[in-house]
Structures are given as C-alpha cells and as structure tokens.
Image 1: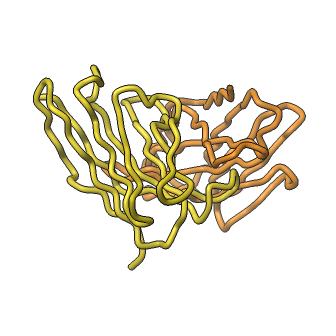
Image 2: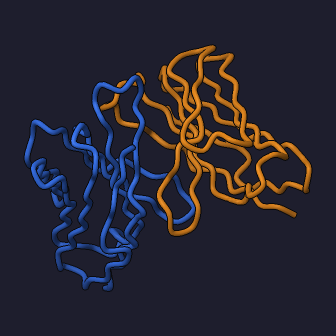
Amino acid sequence: DGGITQSPKYLFRKEGQNVTLSCEQNLNHDAMYWYRQDPGQGLRLIYYSQIVNDFQKGDIAEGYSVSREKKESFPLTVTSAQKNPTAFYLCASSITGAYDQPQHFGDGTRLSIL
Amino acid sequence: GENVEQHPSTLSVQEGDSAVIKCTYSDSASNYFPWYKQELGKGPQLIIDIRSNVGEKKDQRIAVTLNKTAKHFSLHITETQPEDSAVYFCAASAGGTSYGKLTFGQGTILTVHP
C-alpha cells in the first residue's frame, strides 16, 4: 500500500537533546512538508521541500532543521534551540509543490519533554 | 499573510441531522480550499476540496460551498453518522505562490450522538 510512514509514534526528549523524527513516503511525490499541531490549534508549517536537495523554511522554522537527500525521505530534527517542542508533528506529501495539489498526511509523531 | 478563521470550535448533533462548519479567509488571492478530517491519534485525511472557479462541490453526503466575494467557504455534512465524529479542519492556499502553502483554520470538534 502506498502511503506516508512516520516513526516513532511517540518520542521523548530530555532537556538539551536533539531528536530526529522520521518521515518516509512511497507515493513517488516530489513535495514534502512538516507541520506542527498544538492542542486546539490548526496546523502550522515548519519546513517544506519541493524537490530532492531543496527545502525552504515555513512559518515556524526556528529550532528545527531538515534534510532531503532522497525523494522518499524528509527527516525533521528538533534541536535544543526549540524551547517548546512538546507537540504533535505531522509529515505530508503532494505530487508537486503546486498550490492546488492535495496534501496527504502521515499519522504523526507525538513529542514530549521528560 | 493569509488568516483563516473557523467556526464553531465544537459542534454537537444528533445522528441523521446536518452539520455545517464555516471558514473565512483574508487573502483574496486564495483559490484552493481543502477540508480535512482528523480522527484521534491519526493524521488529517482530505475529504473534499474546491477551487475558486467552482461555487459548490458535492461528494455523497459531503458538500462544500464557496463565496469568493465574501471570502468564506463552508462544509456541509448531511445525514450525519456516529463515524463522522472527528476534528475537521479547513485550509486555504493562494495560486501564484511558489509552493503549496496551506493555512489552516483552528479546527471544529464534531460529535454525532447516536
């Protein structure tokens, strides 16, 4: 089955630690996205990538980093510079980065601080 | 930048009734409007979308209407069923941008009582 796989489902971070969230897609989509979801709020864009080896900051990129070395993979690192990392993180992909391409989401990773 | 307001934040209906969720947007350049359904612990799933050259779109029990002049769009669910219970998000995206940046509303928790 084609889809987006996010791992792990739950992740715990100690103070001062960097953690990396995995996102893999087998949909052959060019564009991939990372969103953050906080309780009672909509999704906010962290980073996006329209094509391999290219990515751009979204609205809330501070304290996060990404890479796009392979078409199917778009890992997100939450660095120690992110002071409020506790949230639900969602990865998405679309066929292209065009404005009207439907975005398909994974089932998320819930990050908590120990 | 774009701002999307979604109302109501919670909606409770009896099985078989209709449910309506409304969103307003600020950027007159927006012309793609998807709706997502999110079940507990899952990622959002696209349920219907509309482009600005269309005023209404239906898919079985779900319909979306768009009023570009007033800058608002609505989701209509008829003959609601308990499995429709979820969080619903609207979003907007503007053509002419270099990527598919979606701005999301805050979400509506829909509860359908048997």
